[in-house]
Every structure is written in C-alpha cells, then in structure tokens.
Length: 174
Image (cartoon, rainbow, N blue to C red):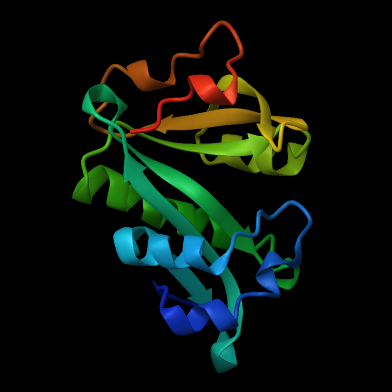
C-alpha cells in the first residue's frame, strides 16, 4: 500500500535512495527547505510499507498573467518502485494543485534532451515539447521545456511550440 502525503523536514533524511539515479538532480539542503517553506502544497512524498520512501515530487507556482503556472522542479521514483504509475500519480496531484488551487494556465518542467525514457513518460502524461533550452544543464546539455495546459487555458495557447531554441538567460523568471 502506498501513501502519498505532504513532505516534511524529517523526510530529507530518508529520500537519498530515491536521489541516487544519475538523471535525478540533487540540490543542497537550503534549496529543499526553501521549497518546503514556500510551496508546501507542491511537495509530496510517496511512502510504502514500513515508512520506506518510494518517490517524491517538488514544485512551485510562478509567473504573471498568462504565464501563471505550476512548475515541476523534480519528480523521482526509486528504481525498485518504477513502472507502477507512481510518477503519474505524483504528477496528477501537482497538476491538480496548479489547476484547482492556484488556477494556473499550464504546468511546465525541464528534462534533459538525452533522457528519452522521461520524455516518453511525460508525453504519455499529456506534456508536449514547448521549446529547447540550449545549455540548460550546466551549459553542457540542452533541455526540453515541456508543458501541459490546464483548464484555465481553454485555447491551449500556453503550449504552442516556439519556432526557435532559447538560452537560459532568455527564460522568464518572475
């Protein structure tokens, strides 16, 4: 049985196994605590029997006007719990918070262009490639900015792909 609940400070000491994947970005303690303090509704943990951490998602809301959106900063599932739709459940919950609580126009995320497994998974979840960001990952690898429109974006304007790649300094940070 899996329980999905809000992340707590104590969980920072139990999720190392989930972060060991080479494609999972690992941040410093201050970064995790900042997200937990500022956007607790976007920070969820999946826990299995015996309190074992199975996966987590962290995100935030950001932007102004029609760029008001939810953002997936990280979603990760421990290898032994993959292929059980856990990432999909976590993504659904983040999207629900964005759509119903914050009335965002879309949810976005960044993914390495080389991570074809994750790109395929996000496409199955309804995300599409909005733009390519050159050198997003430490100036060494490009990222795709993938988006999924929420119910507020009736015309799906937020997901119309850009016709050119952008550089990190061109991203909108509000």
